[in-house]
Image (cartoon, rainbow, N blue to C red; front, side, top):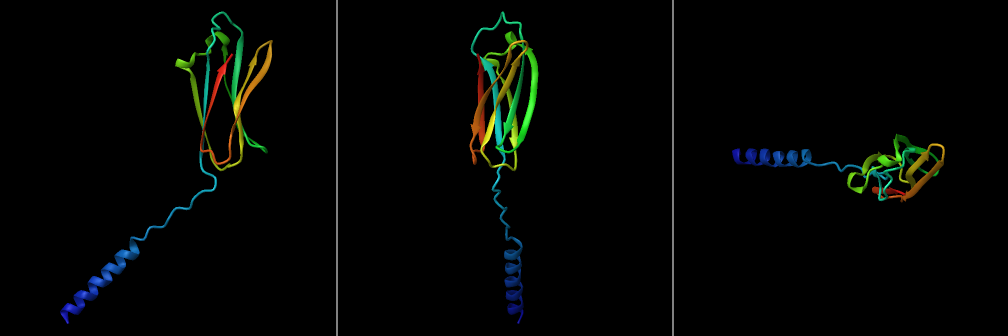
Length: 133
């Protein structure tokens, strides 16, 4: 009788352990986090160019602006070379559409332009490498 009670307690303990150790799986998100890294530099010598330039970065879908930020104003001669490039990173959550990513810049009293790239749907990381020239 004692052996049967011991066996029953052992079996019950195994059952409860098996039930309590069951792991629930985490749901897989259909919109994973995406990382967009912006690199800004130049390969040219602008050491004599004292014009001011304003850079901004953007991330857009077909229907909305997800991120739009002015970086700062600087002299063109102060744009760093590739060894000292400026690096900015932005995380995008909840949007799995194709994205337009890039830089806009304005040179005072001259005009504005842009550099645009694409982050494809499902792509979890993107590097936007802009060499100003």
